[in-house]
Amino acid sequence: MKHCIILLLMIGVSTCKNIYPRDVNYQPDQVHISFGDKTNDIVATWSTFNDTASMVLYGVDSPERQAEGASVLFVDGGKAKRRQWIHRATMRDLNFDTRYVYQVGSEDGWSRQFSFKTPPAGEDWVVRIAIYGDMGLNGSMSLPFLKRDVEQGKYDLILHVGDFAYDMNEQEGRVGDDFMNLLQPLAAAVPYMTCPGNHESAYNFSHYSSRFTMPGPESNLYYSFDVGPIHFVSISTEVYYFTEYGIKLMVEQYEWLKRDLTVANMDINRRKRPWIILFGHRPMYCSNSDDIDCSVEYTRTGFLGLFGMEPLLKEFGVDLVVWAHEHSYERTWPLYDSVVYNGSYAAPYVNPRAPVHLVTGSAGCREGRDHFRRNPFKWSAFHSQDYGYTKFKAFNKTHINIEQISVDLGGQVIDEFWLVKNKELSFNQL
Picture (tube, rainbow, N blue to C red):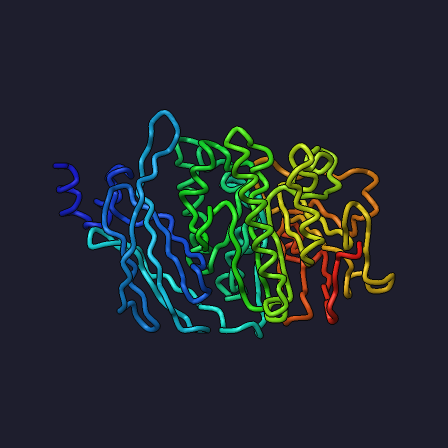
């Protein structure tokens, strides 16, 4: 302490604060935001390494308003039982289509000032999203490109489709801390929506469940939310694989998903939000050569033949299904039960007769790229091993544009297609 006081006199408080061990630091760490129960409710989440109050200061021109939140003690499952407090505070009923500035913390220490823009109201606006999975602390090849895009205001939200940090629990949780700070330029500026992957399984997915705040009253392992003309559904594919944590959760998710899709598919809701998009980590379909997950896919076929999700995609007319897990990119033709159901020979994605599947797990991690079979399946429309990420734009209730960006090629678009739905369709005839 004596050395710190001497250093304080010489070079100031902030430098002195930085030489304290991290686990006695009151400063906010790992700041990120997500949607609350509505798109104009924004939840700020952050960590401190000592217990302190949870407050967010926010406003349009300056942070003059205050919202109080709460914190939960999170203890890593490793030998050191390393502790941190994870704070949450919600900025409620914000003006739509408005830029806000905010900072989080307490009188013991405040973060720097961040900003975000709320989405427009209603359903009739262009929704812009970056989508990817499998981004690690090391080898995060897409991150510089995503940072540039976020700085230029190109996205209304981000979907991270599982597998974070590689792995958040490593080094007694320090890898998770460093990764969340690495994400902060993205996740503190744009609502960061997630689902769990297999790399989050340690200690019963406790790092994922504790670090991220997703909307709805259910487990944050599965939830749904509405943005513009889209109903998004996030699921955990991992409940089919880590059954030591309980088959009960798999059954609960399946029953919840059926209820959620039933409501989303009601005429009054489907007219408002005609697009239903589901995302989860492990794909139902892929043509990679180095993984058996897509050959024995429990999310599709179910556990012991029960609770398979693919029939629900058909029953409720899910338009697009987004996956990751494979460290590559792949687009399918409209597909159900391994059979192609194109809208027409000339325009396969115009009024398609089955869901389209997209695998986008090439954001970059220490495990490298995944390779493809020499002879891809007939339902595979395009695939690439390039590192990259997906740009998604829902222009309106009838047209969605999707591009795959290759960071190997400096940000070049290597795949693009339009998903068009300009008449009422039912997949129940399959």
